[in-house]
Length: 165
Image (cartoon, rainbow, N blue to C red):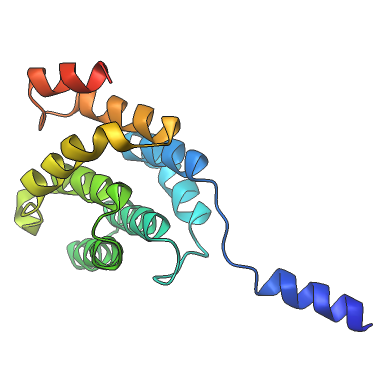
């Protein structure tokens, strides 16, 4: 009985482990297909602000994307602001982490001007360009290359430099 209780406690209190490769892929799909937003949101349901900053940033993105399709303007705004609070928390917690800045850049690039969430575009873009060559994860590198290649924020020269790395 004690052994059973031990395993149950270990299972219940085990930290959230989510595969970043899967999250990145689902984020990309959700950003382009509203039918995938709920899957993305559900994938991050157990993430809290105490989780890994990359996961926290993606959860913020999921909340912000979900808010896009809320029924009222008030709910859209509230949801968006909640999502942004997760993203900003992730960056405050880990200011040198690249992935939360990438998430913030994507959300800022695609948020409506009326929401006034565009202040860090140049900062995050430059951070990504500066730190790109030091990325260890090939999956993250490829994910960023794909994003940069289609983003209007990056010049043709910047896209060429990144695609060659």
